[in-house]
Length: 119
Length: 102
Image (cartoon, rainbow over all chains, first blue to last red; front, side, top):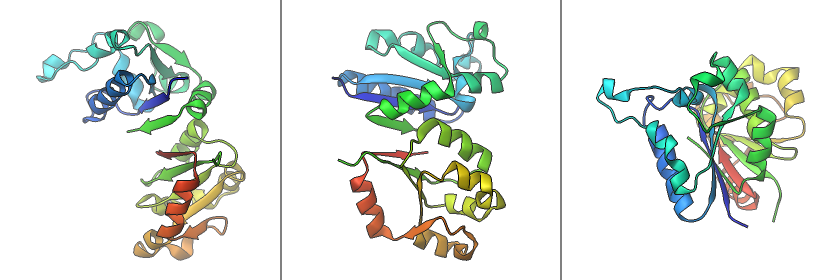
């Protein structure tokens, strides 16, 4: 049974370094054969809006890496439904290959995880 | 191995934020430890409300005594919160199956 690590994203990709550090952590955990779930809540769900261009801010487009995570065996990119609604987002505004789960479903995943990291 | 999770609350937050995060991460029988600036929250009126007490009635509420004293709010917290010292903190962390910082 692989170790499960859930990583919670609470801030948008352009708000500080938490997004990048969380992604790095996820990649390291996946390299050590952890089952990694990336879970976006609160303002973190804004990270997954399609068509963002951080290059306009002379920054690397961190969100692009989300699209390539499956190559690193990270298949579960989850958003909390309540947070999506609070941010007035529609599903068609988000990048592909993300799953939306209710807060209750997120709780179940968190309770089942071996590690829960919240940055 | 104990089955309870230990939640470390380190930043001051509103009751609304506490309630949302509580719903995301906690289970019956968990311990919730307030330390650092989160102890300021305990002095607020929302953290004395029936709503707070009902929400957390199946959890073990703790606060780090030195952090309350340092902020001079020791008198302003509800009786349902147990004050602990660093040694008890270590024992609690060692006993928990998982330690989660919000």
